[in-house]
Image (cartoon, rainbow, N blue to C red):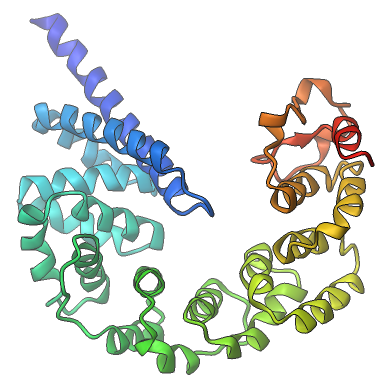
Length: 346
C-alpha cells in the first residue's frame, strides 16, 4: 500500500505535465498557417487520455491543479480549468476563471478548458457566463458557444466596444479571435473607431481583424508596423502583403529596400508576394549567417519544397561555430546552400 501511495503522485504529476504540454502543442498547430489535421487529431487523442488519467484520482489531481494556479503557464491553466469545470463546483471554477482573466493566453486556456467538455456539461456554465457582468467571463462563455456551434445571445459589437474602451486586453484578444473565425463584419465600425499612436498588441490585433474582414482601409494604419521596428513586424508583413494590390506592394517593397539592413523584411515580403523570379537572390541570402534560416523559410514558401524532405537542411554540428552565435529563428532549419544551388542549377 505504501508503494502505491508513493507512486500515485508521480503518475498524477506525469498526466498533468503531459496534458499541459499537449495543450500547448494543440494550440500551436491549430494556429499555424497550414495545420496538420492528422497531427492535431493525434494530439487531441493523447490529451484526452491524460485528462482521463487525472480524473481517475480527481482529489490527488486537484492538489496539483491548485499549485498550478500560482504560475503563468497556459497549458497548466487549461488542464486545471478542465478539471474545475468537470467538478461542477463553484469554489473550484471561480479561482480558475478569476486568475485566467489576468492574461490573454490564460483566458484562452480557460476557454478551451470549458469548451473541451461536451455541450451537455459545458453548456450549463456557458449560459451562465454570457449573462455575467465581467467581460472576461462573458468571453469564455462565447468561446464555448462558438466551439459547440450554438447561437450565442450576445451582441459582439457592444461587448467589444466595452473591452476596448476600458483596456481589457485579455477579453479583447478572445473576442477578436472569435470575430476573425466567424468573419463577423458587424463589428467593423467599432474596430475602425479604435486608434492609438503606439504600435502595441491590441492595436495590431484590431488591424489584423479589420484585414481579415476585408477592410482594405486598414492598410495605411498597418504600414508603420511594416516599416518600423516593433514586436509585430513579421506578422504584419505576412498579413498585409498577400492582399495588397500589385502596384502598392511594389511601392512598399521599394520603401523597405531603402531602410537600414532591409534584407530580412524583403525576404519575408517577397515570399508573401510569391515573387519566384527572385529565388536566386533569396538563395544568395542563405550564405549570410544572420539571414540563412529566414532565407530558407522564404525559399520554401516560394517553391513549396520542404528542406528536410529534400535533404537540404543542415544539423547544428555541421555548421561553423560562428554561425551558431546568431540568435533568432531557432524554430527554422539551416538550409544546405550548396545542395540547393546544385538542385536549382544556380
